[in-house]
View 1 (cartoon, one colour):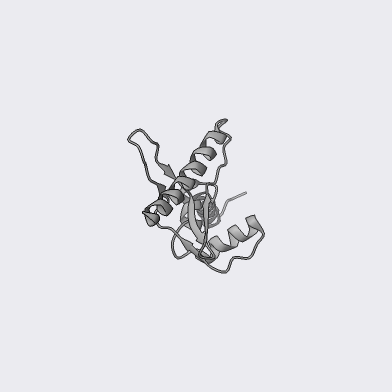
View 2: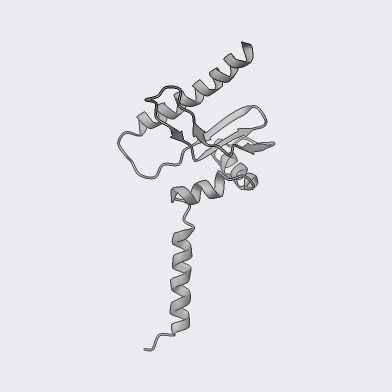
Length: 125
């Protein structure tokens, strides 16, 4: 049986594109859902997760949580957005069980709470 080189080449390209655009890859996930201009796609994802309607969404272009102390870690979220003008939404996609995921979630959660408290404190003083 003789293989058609055009068909084989086409199948190879399709496989390459599927691997390239796999949303399980961190960069691809961030580029699809955490990128300004893709608000409707992100809104659909978050609506599917929380099962509540979202009127509007604003994606934060800077998903990095700031350091407060010199020895603090920097956290980088996959999606950092504001829903309906008043709800902060921080999403981190995790595929591999790293056995220490709880520490990561605590770290991100505490950092996000500190950012809100810090902004409120600055506004009051």
